[in-house]
Length: 171
Image (tube, helix red, strand yellow):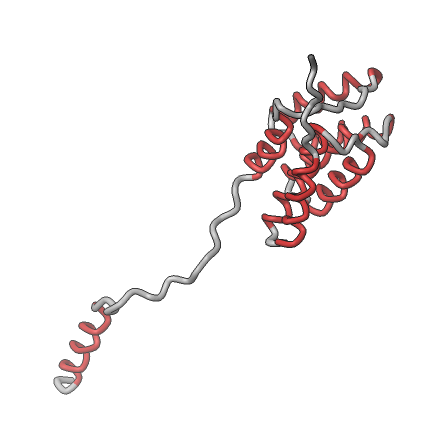
């Protein structure tokens, strides 16, 4: 037993020591911004004051549904808001503004493929200029950047720049 005492003591001391150097830190990419920040970026793109604004007419028969969607979204109930918005899209399936709003709700829910499809469809049915166009391409850009699809993100930035047209000079 006395022969094992020095060995046991050495093992205990070895177990108590700290490593001489910390383990190598793995390179990690920075965390993605919160989803609400992505949606805020998309909506902020519509705010340019210097642009010619082209706004499609709103269908009055779904205005109450729009208001309900906005209320649910403010409450953070994105799935319920998307369900109400789907009802509005049954009434007016080709409304580009509703489609873009649905894309933004899909971003909130992290349904990336759905968001890309909806924003693309909104762009193709929409005015292709002005605030809605900027929201379309900003939504696509943030999704592509988030998923490191650099070529698609570059194209989205290029298309985004084409959405802003200076208003005519009035005399």
